[in-house]
Image (cartoon, rainbow, N blue to C red; front, top):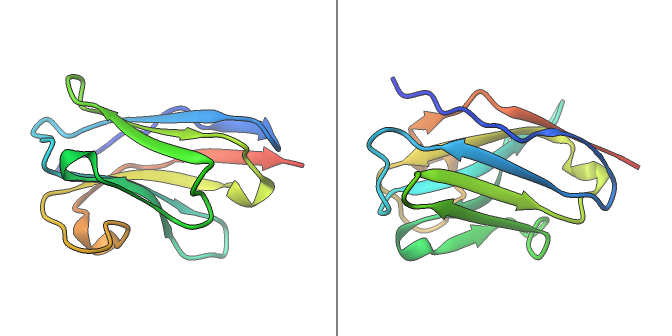
Length: 124
């Protein structure tokens, strides 16, 4: 069982930035899909951003233009650059990895490996 480990969470004021990191599985491949999800207390988990083959990306509407997903192919590290943070972004953020995927890379059904999460708290 592969366990992913996120890092980079913390507490910031609204308008601030954070960058999350997540090393991939040992067999991580550029063809695989990797993504970031989040879950706030009392809410369901939701997809934030994903990246697939040829670095094709998808973003949830509520982060488009503020967050950027990227990966370091050599180090197999996934990143999420979060700018212009707002209190509504407060949540536990999870990275995930999958092997095959189809339309809508933000659908959690494509992902088989998950991290334990890193907390992001944005104060007003």
